Length: 174
Image 1 (cartoon, rainbow, N blue to C red):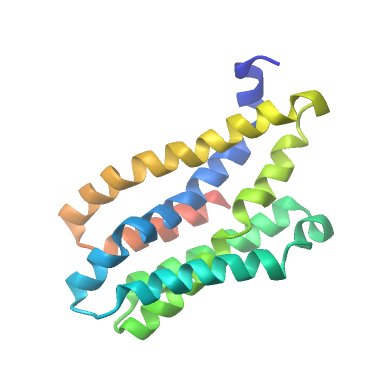
Image 2: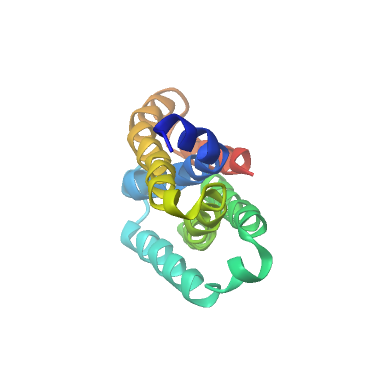
């Protein structure tokens, strides 16, 4: 298949992935600065909880895509990620921010594989590798635009607003 045909087939799955990836990129790039702005200690704890809950969710729910389907798993995952990011946005204490980071990691964990399974189902078996490559480009695109966009949002609305942005984009991914 041509690139254009592949793009058409995986576009909606890729957009969902991109919207989910924004929250991941925000946490990875801005958690330390957010904690410093809030005068909270130990931002590394938030990153550890984000990563740990990501891995734990993948281990515990690895069969869920086969059982319930990629779209259902992605929808639930994006809702959980959105909730975690909203908690980060509104967190008055570092303890609540830790909860938000953990929920965000658990939520994002299955977005890529869940939507990826559905994306590759839209093409013939011999085109699945190429379709996965096109699909993955949406993750890369989201990672690339999130930093500059978040920097702009921070300049206008402050650090916590980026987590509202992440929460809203995860909802858009639904």
